[in-house]
Image (cartoon, rainbow, N blue to C red; front, side, top):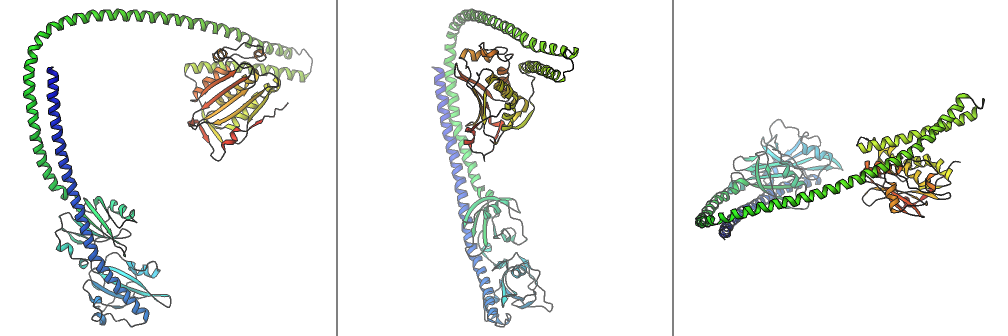
Length: 611
């Protein structure tokens, strides 16, 4: 009861403390959210105000350039110096108008000219209009050669008789584009930038630095937002406003009829500074509120501890009795565990004895089978070699060659038996290594069928294989993959009567793997006979199984080689109907040609055997 009371007190105190923390956290989050929201509104308002005033000046400059172009196209003589009073926009304090010929020489200008008139052919706005790449082109800020001050040029192409005749340039003074930055109360980290559509910064206004036309590079965040917002006229983003490295809450606003964007940003730290001061107040009040339930919990726990101490003395005596009882139960449990261990040990001994007897039987069967498999080819080798050595049939070279071929066949048979035994030994010891390579499935099946065609011909068994050009490549050991198929094909032919069929097929698996099936119309096997056939050195005893030699290693070795490649081998068989062996390779060992239809895998063709 005391523990429950203490737990309730602690839980109640924690609940109060959590509630206080949640309230303080919510207040801090709301304060931050409100501050950021106000910053976004301020940035949007600044963008709209600056965009209106700057757009008015740019449109005035563009209209001046258009009017001069029209006068030029009508053939009116241009004397901008004299027309300043007639067209006040030409002489506006923030706009200068200049006309050049096709060579870049100044024809007329509203700027007072010196004796030496500069050539403007090297300016980018002149080259752009000369190449005919733009209609109204807004150039990067430059220092005017006539006005000796920084200007932003707007240029139009002049043509006469369809040919380039010069350029009209309306130059805007950046410092006179807008006066809002001097009239409104800007923050210490507030910055307003005028940016061209291709990302070039034309002007930048800050409270500390005023006007800046030194072409500082745009931040990657600004470039990314502007370049990926082709359909959006306004928007917000938070970024590191280069070149001062200050993170700002920024709002961009695109001009509707000009390739310009105004970006206004308010420093995030400056915006959040009042919120952070408010957060400290909230945190202080929260800590004070947290102390109250904390001290209440301590006082109540002390009172409970006093009562618990009194009850503890009474509980100690009962604890001694319980400990003695627990000791007796522990001894009884240990005795029961020992009895269980003894029964388990006896069962393991019985199982080990059974396995030893089975191993002894397998060894005896293997030795009996090997004595026949080794003695027969050795007798043939010795007999035929003695005939050749002693020249028992005179000089009949053809018969000697036939005997030599029999000797070679018997030796090859012995070598295959020894190799199979060695492969099984290395696999069981975990020392068999695969030499990874890529092999075409068509080539693998074709070579495997060639290896057993003589056996099929001798047994009168028909072979069938998938259609060629399946477009499948297997990754693995070429020799071991071929050995798997040859072992399975040899077994299928061996246990199929004359006139039967052995069919090889390949099918893609749903998980990207491959299944190769070898189906025969042989004698088939029962479930017990399948288990026996999968054991090393064991053969299913029947009338047909002794037509060909065999050590009982083919199927078990194929299973182990398949598992080394990460695959599985399963056997399905029905006595009297035949057997189907399925080899499945995982997707990581198979590469399919997507151009080959899956229906092609269902096609099989008979294999022609050379007689």
